[in-house]
Length: 142
Image (tube, rainbow, N blue to C red; front, top):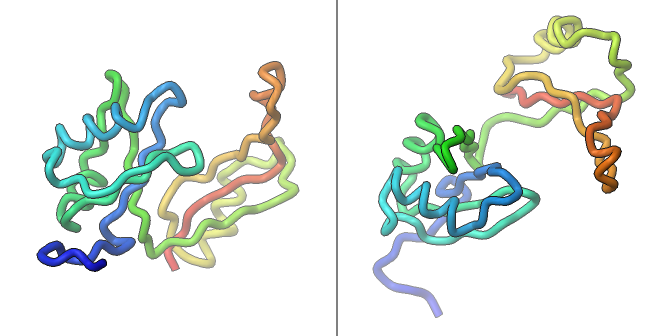
C-alpha cells in the first residue's frame, strides 16, 4: 500500500556512516538527529559494517556530508549513497610502491574523490586483523 503525503525516497536521500564497531544503530541515529533533526530521519539499518540512513530531504544529506558527524567524541565521515564516483581497486601492488606513484598514473583517468588506501586482508583471527592485502582502493570522479 502506497503512503500518501510523503514524497518517495531515493538513493539520493541516503548516507553511509562508518562508525566504530561498538556503536549501535541507535547511537548513530541520535547523532544524525542532533545534526539534522530527529524527525528528518526516515529509515536506517546496519549494512556492511556501516549504518545506512535515509533522510526526508536531500538538503539534509548535503548538510551531513559537508559537516560530518561526531559520535562518542570522535569525528566520523559521512558518505552519500549516490555518488558520481567509481571505486577503483588496484591489485598486486607491493608495499614498497608509494601511493604517490600510483596517484600520478591514475590522475590520467580522472580526478580523485578520496585518498588512496590499502585494503585490509580481512583475516578473522584477532592476531592477524592488522595484516594488509596487496590491493589499494581509491574513489575517482568519472
